[in-house]
Image 1 (tube, rainbow, N blue to C red):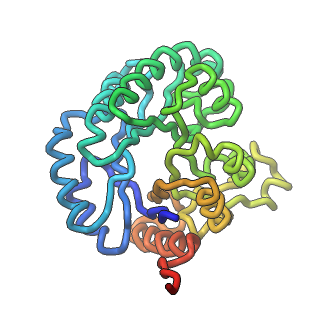
Image 2 (image 1 turned 120 degrees about the horizontal axis):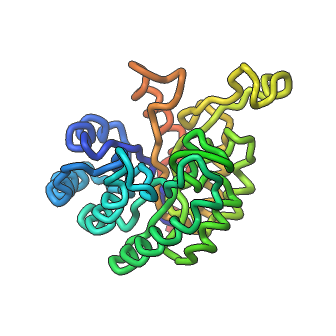
Length: 294
């Protein structure tokens, strides 16, 4: 049984500076992310420098990420689609076969109205990726959208997933899944994970705490916050169950912590929280590997 790596997300723009500082804490993988555009980043040079760091620390790049709206080509998202293309083309240089991000959506419109454009864009991107042995994964984050309207992403609800994968039924399209985004809408993540395992390509290590007392008194649309994004180890998810399900289905990827969301372990305590999450997730996968006697 191959081990599931535990790592973290790092901005691609600051990876060369950040990774040497945090790799000694024991992170085993890094997901390099870009917001809306890769900009003028020299991807071959970045891959070379990051590759040297991976070799030095015995770590890997789990995936590359681009988080924008590739369906519109407008405003600050004007380069998002081209950035998907660049990351797909350069992923092998980073030693990964996975590029992840938001699907995008037609702003302010119901999910159904985004599907024709999704089919057009990701039909072509999936073919481009398949030609290079690359897979594509969609994060299940609503970005404050819902079924009726939103500005970023349609891949935040399991019914939308069915519609997406029916629209583009390619084996190299999947999900970048995390329990937090489902818990925010009061979906139980554990049965969902069992059902959708064939499409789980990457896992974000982010949890949530649900204040059920507030839900019962004020509901989900009242004046009180009822849910908070949390670093693993501080939230409600049973990550031992998550990792057990992943292993039962042969998952061999990474769980990369998505930091900078926890309202308690924030600011000066950010890395304290992330390293706690790292240690916690390693324990949930069974601790250090111990070989059997012969």
